[in-house]
Length: 178
Image (cartoon, rainbow, N blue to C red):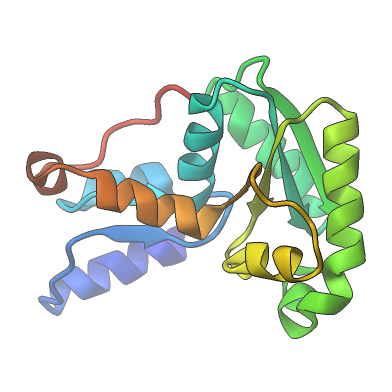
């Protein structure tokens, strides 16, 4: 969290212009601090994915890599007021770096986690982590249906694209509707 804020402040001090800030760590550490320091909109991968999933009005779960993330993401979601639509976090063995190094090799673990999420009642699965950017393509290339799969990077980009010119000029708002 402090590293992201330090980077933003360094860019500001150097006069580096930016139209938005995307916090590309799925747990969105420091999101609130970044928003308080940035005149530009700040979008987090986790927040944007969860908001989009909640807007669908159907249950959703997160699939991510790394055992430590289960409790952290669950706590973060509950802190944002996640309701009955959130069914939990399913973790695959290994780390995001393992997925990045061998996306096809991680596929069985990802699919199993998606099946566990669905078994717990989730209709939508969020692939949690920047490492999963483009992973829907990997799933599709192996015949795995992806209509109900969201990626954090993609949802963050969609949030930024949806901003009106007025919204783009004002500071980011607090999380709502997750």
